[in-house]
Amino acid sequence: MKRLLFLLLHLISHPLIQSEPALSYEHARQAVLTAEEKLMTGGHTHLSTQEAKVDDIFMEYKFGELSQGCRNAEQNAAALHFFKAKPLIDRSVVFNFLQKMPKGAVLHLHNTASVSSKWVIQNISYMSGMLRCTTATGHSVLTFRRLPKEHKCQSQYVLVADERKNSVDRQVYDNNFERLINLYTPVPELEYPTITHVWDRFQDIFSVLGDALSYLPAFRAYHWQMLEELYNDNLMYVEIRSSCKKLYDASGRTFPRKRTIRELYALNNKFTQLHPDFLGMKIIFAVHRGKEVDQLRETIAEFKQLHEMYPNFVVGFDLVGQEDKGKPLYTLLPALRDLPSTARLFLHGGETNWFGSSTDINLLDALLLNTTRIGHGYALAKHPILLNAVKTRHIAVEVSPISNQVLHLVWDMRNHPGAQYLALDVPVVICSDDPGFWNAKGLSYDFYYAIMSLAPKNAGLPILKTLVWNSLKYSTLTKEEKSRAFKILELSWTRFIEKVLHKKSW
Figure 1 (cartoon, one colour):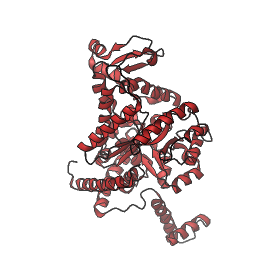
Figure 2 (cartoon, rainbow, N blue to C red):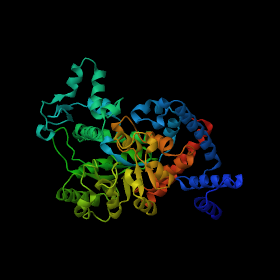
Figure 3 (cartoon, helix red, strand yellow):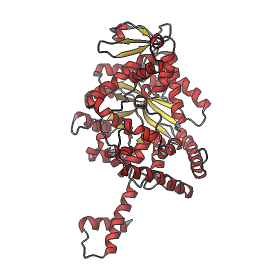
Figure 4 (cartoon, helix red, strand yellow):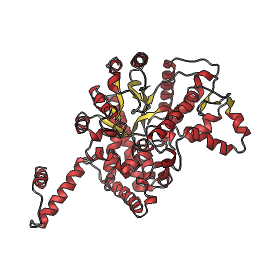
């Protein structure tokens, strides 16, 4: 190692000239490449003999797809917008590998945007009694109760079942209905020309669907499906951001937030009993960042009660919504300081393209507030002191590649700052954010971009394994829970490696 450092220092201070021996040039060149490989995420991850063979298989898949992309830009999924790349990814051998690979946990997922829109249409929208009304701005609101003032309805409520029955073609009706809760478009560059366009549409979807998902039968079915989709994508644990909205039933009764938590707690216990290799979920209480300080204090007081009731289930607190338009963390400090010491912060920070604005300076305040992880951290690369602090203090950055692309921060994923975080071995966990709103499911699509676009061309199983292990390492699982989690992961990983080598169920 000392010899390697000497060569690097020599290279920086004394560039090689043509008169020096060719061996010295080649030696120095290889030394730099080796140093970069060792520095990056996965650089010190040891692979067994069996894992090394699987790495060879995976790299054959990866090189094949990247080479095809080099020959034909229209086939280069790693460089395309997800809406254009998804058909290619779905046929990808790399993606097939990633789907079967154990991925540990997803640590940044908004519950009401977590389930595939296709399932919502085929199930929630077919529930008896679903209503739809239209606001003054022409937006639809889906619900199972009549509250015209709260829903801001300008039209009469209509039964979705009646609309569907009276439509010319039920399939066409369902396809149009799905557009209400999905951002997908074949021409994102035209339909969402600016970040304002896509964020307005994105936030509108929460308003379209939110009240329907607060209906108790829909709430239960939806969150069970959320866990099913994660489990089927070979995930074993999830931490969801949730506002824990008040629920209601068919009789019109409304229940307090503690009922919401009880429902999630009971559902979690039932699911983990049926799936012993799934560790379940925990809740990060999420509040919209547009609230005034006094309003935020009131919500924090309610959060305290929920956290006291379920300290190992309602584990933390976050502020959500478009960061560029929300209140900076600095202005909300008087309220945030009221949080109990046992509750951890998981703050969105730097989800922006701006540099030197209140939005990216949120990263500084998140660190000063001792955040446990950073949501997105897209602008972190522009702040070297903060980046170094994140690495030194082992604060994981929750990188959500597809979300950042769909919400207009980056077009070509190869330009995502996550590439720099991986190159510098900054703690990173790969997350999916709101997959139900853009035709994704689980976490495999985000892992595809992580390994095909953010990681170097020659990076394979070492970086994938490190990212998987990171997801449990930086979770809020207790010491005992982590011990069990890693045992389960080791077993499922070993089985996966064996299946790849023997082509079982492949």
